[in-house]
Amino acid sequence: MTDLKLYELAGCPYCAKVKETLADLELEYESIMVPRSHGERTEVEAISGQTGVPVLVDEANGVDGMSESNDIVEYLRETYGNAN
Image 1: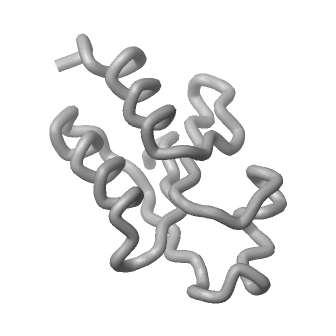
Image 2 (image 1 turned 30 degrees about the vertical axis):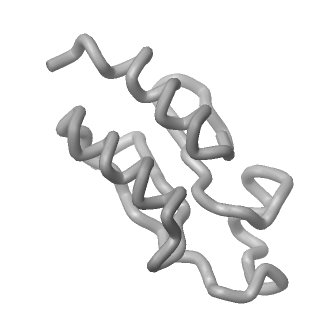
């Protein structure tokens, strides 16, 4: 079981950027696909306070709902970049 969860949408270029970083760092994560309609994204809104994706949850490090792909990529590289 992984502590990383990524809320994403198929075809989202910002999500793809985060997924590429997760792959580069060889990190396992749970992918949670969100509905296309923002109005139906209640789970991701409850976690992050907004309906945009990607949103990262890292339970091991107390990250409850980080949004913005650039912030997520930076966080992953800083937190896990030296682990491999």
